[in-house]
Structures are given as structure tokens and as C-alpha cells.
Image 1 (tube, protein in one colour):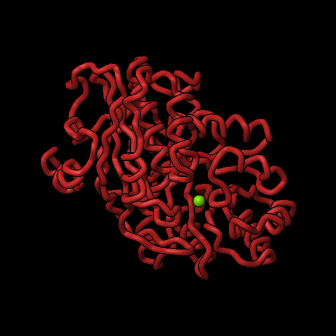
Image 2: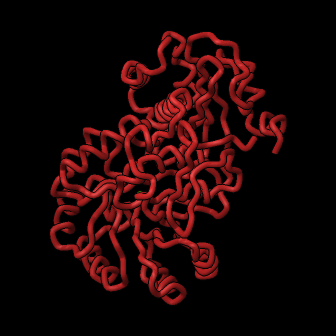
Length: 377
Ligand code: MG
């Protein structure tokens, strides 16, 4: 897609007429803007088209609303994005409203990350994906100014990236078989559960791929402790590594009961969003699934990794359906996590970026400054 077509299909032209920010650089190569010594934010909606309908225990969809963000400083551009799966409560309208309310031109030093992101966080409560879009763009910008990728700035060894899982949703037998074929290059399969086809889906995968480890994500779909415990034992016998969010996020006592008895680690996802939420999980969950759209971006996600480690909890890094922009941002943290579920970019048909790649199932980080991404159009 060329840039003019992107502008038309993204709704950029419409927003440019009403937004107080400049869109002139969106989608363009870097270093064309005159030096202003200020942070300039621009953004545009961009609907993500899913390759397959995404069926979870509680809903189904074929697109994901998304807002693409640019942060420019002295001609250098950092890219970010907000992805808004409906269950998180944000929308193109709410993200656009939040971003319009920001005045980042007050900051003349982009390296004051703490000041900038504390300001962004304080403008309004919630709005986590909107805040993440600014955080991700700021990290891309700063890495580019420093000329280094973020995994290097944090001191992480890129050889230690984990394998990433490939997700198979809840679906008909034919679609499950087709998705298992697509999943063949991967070394870990993530299976969505929580409806009445749980065992059937696992049996199909085991018939087609007898040895590949699997992990399951119940997305709060199980409603009985006893059934959950039975399933954990059944799954453990079938080379399953862990179970994610078995119960409703409010079922704290029931989750602790299951964790005490389960042969598999229990990982929290929907049950938490921000850093302070993690402290109360000691003894309830064995680990946490960090996602940038929940954590408000990399700055807090990096702190979450440290806190979870200090609490002796397992760490997983996940994503929403996102372009390679946010997925690659998260991949920079992957050398220090136990599990990675970073296939959100592979589930969409209209990725805007070239970023981290998956080679033999393993996350592979590029030696490019910033997040390590290049816009495709
Ligand atoms: Mg999950």
C-alpha cells in the first residue's frame, strides 16, 4: 500500500482537519522536520484486519481498532500504537480524545522519561492503551537518538530470547486443523479454552503434533474449581506447560485453591493491569502475563519484570492483536522472561511495520536503534 492509500484508508485525512496536531510526517521517513527542540505528537486511527475470526470464551471478532502514533523530536520520529480489544474498554474515540488532551510540546528534553510519562499518566485515569502508545513512541525515539536498541540499553542478551507461542483459538475442527498446519514452524502452541470443545481441540493438536509443548489460555472461561483441577491434571499428562487465567478475574480464593493443587503453574492475565496489582498475587498465581496495552507501556512493564522476579513469580510477555510496532517493543523485554506470547502481528493481514522476526519458533531481535522497527508504508 502506498502512503496516499494509507492516508485515505486510515481516516487520517479526516482527522487531520480536526486535530490540533500535525500529521504531515505520519508514515513518512525520518529526519524531514525542522528542529524545534520540542516533542510533537501526531496520531491516526488504523483498523487491524484479522486473518481469522478471533474466538475466545467470551466473544468473537474479525477486526481490532488501533491508533498509530508518532512522536517527533528534532526531525527524529519514534513510532507507537494503541491497540484496543473491546474487552479492555478503550476505543478509537477515547484514545483520540486522550491524545488530543496532551501537550507534550512543554517538554524540551525527551530523556526526562519519568517526568514525561508521569505527566501522561496523570492527565486522566485508565486510558492504558492510549498511554502505552506515547510510552512506546518515546522509547523508539530515545533509542534512535542514542543509536541503540532497547534490549541493549537494558543490558539484555539477545541470544536469550525465548520461543514464542502461536495461538489457536476456539473454532470448528476444520479451522483448528488449518491453524495447526500454520503453527508447524512454532515450538510452543497456545490454545484458547473455556468452551465445551476444550479436550477435543487438544486431541486434534496432539494427533497432528504429538510432541510440541502447549500452553492453554482459558480467558476466565472455567466456572468450577473441581473441573479446573481435573483439566489441569489432564493437560499435564499431555505436555502442557501452564494454564492462563482459568477463572473470572475476581475469583481470588478459588484461584489460590487451584494453584495449591494444580500440577501446572497458573498465570494471571485479565486479573491485573498495572504494577501495584501484582503485589497481591503472591500465593494466588504462579506468574503474570505482562502486556504493554495493560501496563501503559515499556517503562512500567520493565518495572513489572523486576517486581515479579523479586516475588519469585514467573514472567510471561504477551500482546494484543497489534502491528509489529508494539509487538517488537515487547520483544525487547523477552530475553528475561520465562514465556513469550508475541504473535499478535502474525494474526493481522495489514501490518504497517517490519520488526522482530520468529526464526525456528524463537524471537529474533534486530540490531536496529530504538524498538527495532521500520515502517513499511
Ligand atoms: Mg490471556
